[in-house]
Length: 89
Image (cartoon, rainbow, N blue to C red; front, side, top):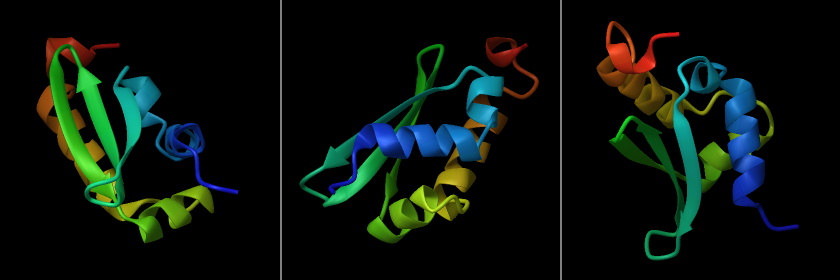
């Protein structure tokens, strides 16, 4: 069975509760030119995209942390959520 964007998104939201905690939008799409999945974070007009290689996706779906995704998510939260009005709970 082929990997679906919704499966990746659901698993990432499960592994990284910060996505819901800070109200960060997450879109997952397959980029056929780069032959990789692309995750895009969004909060109040601010966006950041990162690529998920097949090994990252496989690890994520197995319930392991996705190293590159986690780094990018952390950077996005630091830049647009922590200490800023946009992500106050």
